[in-house]
Amino acid sequence: MDLDEIEKAAIEKIKQLSKEVGIDISGAKVRRSSSRFCLGVEHGDYNGTELFGVGTDRFIWLGYKPNNTSKVRIFSANFPDDGVIEFDLGDVPAPLSVKDSWARFPYGVNYILNREGLELTKGFDAVIYGNIPGGGMSRSASLSLNLILTMLEVNGIDLDDKLKIVDLAQAVENDYIGSPCGKLDQIMILFAKKDMGTHYNPKTSSIDYIPLGAGHTDFRIVVMDTGTVRPGLEKSTYKVRRNECEQLVAILQDAGYEIESLADVTDKLYNEIMARFGGDHPDLCKRLDYIYNAQKRFYQMMDAWKAGDIETVGEIFRKDGLGLRDDYVISGDELEAMCEIARSVGGVLGERMLGGGDKGASGSLVKADSVEALKAAIAEQYPKVCPDFADKYAVHVCGVVDGIAELDGML
Image (cartoon, rainbow, N blue to C red):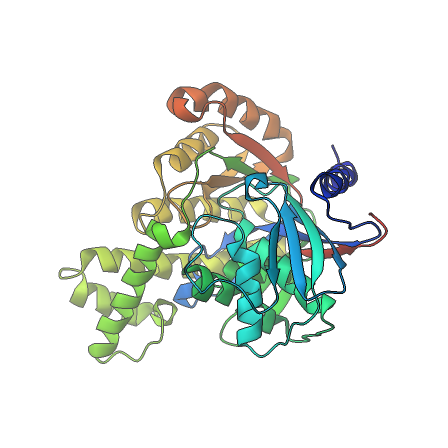
């Protein structure tokens, strides 16, 4: 199905569910938030690097309607066993107290907005449906952003500073849920534009849009969902790696190096640090090795993207994947199984794990005429290599889209 057909099917699902659960959203608005595909630097956000990526066409749709009360009533098609989540604005469970329910996201959004002095008095009814795979494409960031924008709109609050919205979404996960995420996912979704790459520079807090250069090879973004269930970042290797990077920064600061993050380690400094600390802290220095080299590749990748040299973009994407696997040590068996299959297919330009690590999805850049060959190779080989997930994996061929869209007249 094309995007219009997918969208219509999603809206019909929301309509049907609203009737089944008794939530009246007839005539309501729909806000759509995308997934994202990071081209670089994966795990660079909390290490201070520049970031580049695109919004992708796997979405969360939220149909919502003010209800003239101070209550929020919301139902998720993806988590029907949780039933209708209902709460009074300002009266939600304490941070870190809700563990195994998606309700922690609307609770967390309400909590963080109130904490930041954004007064919420007007409630709404809503039904949510999403088709973002659960790992590697930033489902949690997409949901947080969608809920924040909805609560703000219903209450007539206009925040012109989009980076403030990014901060709020990160706080929902960091401070309420307990997930130690950075800002990469939120930035790449909130700022995403159709057919454009989004470049974020943390030194200047600036966003630039980079079109792919003319004359490029026709290619597709392919996400290879392993079918595995990734735990929250607070329970994963992600948290360990982030702590390791912060530990190394502290060690270097104590030794007199004037740095704020691993991204501040330049060429001469890098060689000196590796020689001085590589023996005593080999694992920590391997984390630096990945960030240092990924940051150098980042600028090469940006030049290639602007020139339309997608083959070089793919080569760098592949090198980043090997660095994530071998130096950052944050991939997983199923993620690498998908990558190995992809590497064996002619026309696959590059592949690597996506997102927080351990489980979830891998991604690849593929020549358009090689997509079917990749699908066939995965269908033949992945069930043999990973039989426990033979009936759970999926392959998503993604387009590049706007990160946030408001759809009127759909309900």
